[in-house]
Image 1 (tube, one colour):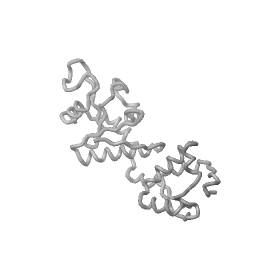
Image 2 (tube, helix red, strand yellow):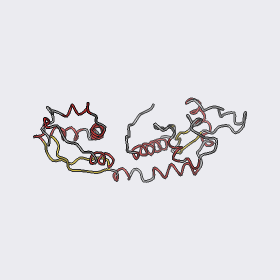
Image 3 (tube, rainbow, N blue to C red):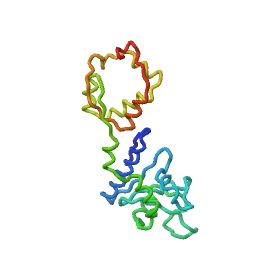
Image 4 (cartoon, rainbow, N blue to C red):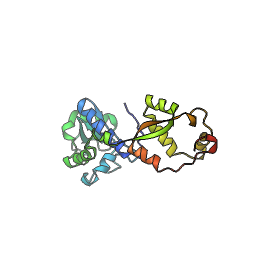
Length: 212
């Protein structure tokens, strides 16, 4: 089982996912999970000052997992033939799972590595509320109705606007569905990151759209 999340510029969303994965593997000890982003094993990047010398991006594949709510790192054998349960090359997923199941107590990441990651996720889940921002917005009634049913669409809407290009702007020339004269005042909940992305934008609507 796997999932993919687009967190955009909001790094806190990424670390909240780390917190969730840590808690899930703690609550369900039979589960093992790993997480990476476009930089690869970003948990190791966070704990870079405390990593063993042998561990680098080239040999870290399939070594970093959460098990029983703790960060685990499958080590490399110190000498050829030593610790026969450790593969000499980065393990496959099946190999990694077998190692974690049979030797979970031997692969626990060092206290300093675990502390570095735990510091990054400290404060969750309470930090979730602190990351939100509510703003009064003048929006077409249809959009207000949609957001009440599916508030998560705020993120997709902000991303589409923030990353718009000239081709996207063609859709903003004329509005046939969300007419400007239907606008009403409403409260919209954003993350602080999404709100910041909006307020830093300068946008002049096309005269044909009816918006000013």
